[in-house]
Length: 431
Image 1: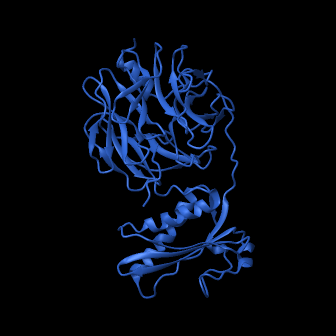
Image 2: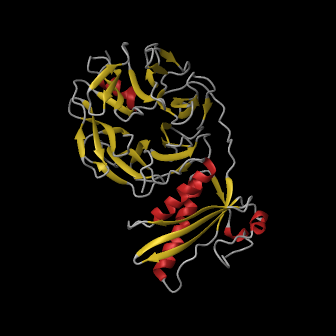
Image 3: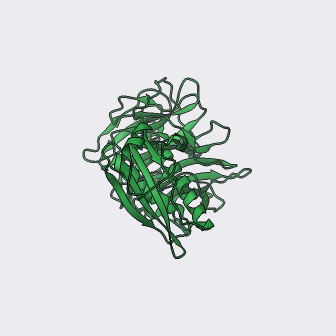
């Protein structure tokens, strides 16, 4: 049996992959949308600032979604809203290439701002959204996020991601331990949740978004803990050996993790309170990093049962294990798309840098999503399966980045002085 040090190297170090794969090409063109300057109450400096901020927040949200191309205001034939806000001259917006037009008016209801919001389909001339958004929270950007969620739903059929958060591991400069942090979907408001002086890795969200489960070290063992969004922590498992890299099952009542309770690291099914329900793998060697399919009928995981570390699937119905990757030496950190038959994993190409790859659940149609940008690893899907958060060392320190599912439109999410890794995208948390 390998030592614990060797075991943790395979779990928490980036994997290797010895194959060149063509970079995946973009498939979806951005939808052109125009956002006119928001109207606001006259002679009210506070309202003017809020309206300006909300317009900027909505614009940033729609750009972040990778669904829309926000048209520049200097291209508009109508620079300001004149006449009734509900009346639109569609011809002037067709001329600038807009498919949708956004208008809004800030209202002050006592001390609380509200947003009277409209979206128009320029092709048909129909009003698609006519709604007033309200919040009593001090963060007025929530009005823009709610509006943005509804705009995204018009085009994609699914709510936007603007109520989601991303958890991650963070190592401060000059320290050896790692903390669990959380930030908004766009990298704002990053803050610590777990600061216990230990090494805390591999966060994953409960299905309802109330808790973040993670692996935490002690002087002897590694176990699974959880924290709420207020930073209240509690221990979930207390096994001999180690419990690593939990992942929630879609039913919300169970999770899978790699346990070495019997000496060998194997994949187990557990209740969310840490009770073992079933041992899923029974092979010598390393069996780690499980992640469930959207319907919960299978998991993907990594194993070195045939020599090198490769990605496999386990079928709950017939207990059949199928090998997916057949090249490389350390293929790990699989992540199953929440809506499609697509699995991500980390791997090393011939340049000896780690990159992110995609394949279907048969191991076919493999495509490379990152290329020639230092180490890229630990991919995590957004809840709609359209975006990928991942950690990368392309600028020196590990930081969290986001890209489209086709590997394009890569942007940093947060820039911290230390090392940020192992992102985990939350479900939609609401407002």
